[in-house]
Length: 105
Image (tube, rainbow, N blue to C red; front, side, top):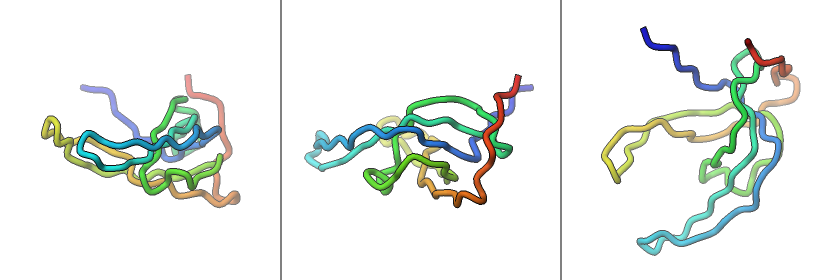
């Protein structure tokens, strides 16, 4: 039986890189931004530390803090495969934020 794959329940952003603007091969303008973050499970336990590419709607608008992610599926038109994608990040009010706990062994 394969190992269960868990999506994070919370994402804590520590730092934000500057917004990068560019133009695609088709001439369309775009902006991207990446964030240093940790992924946490529903109990607030550390799952992984990573660099996250922010959803387009959140570029330039987020601050360090804890967010609840929303995931969806999109088609990658280069290879016609369906892949998961981070759609949005919703800030968690301080009183609802999980207390971070040590990583599970």
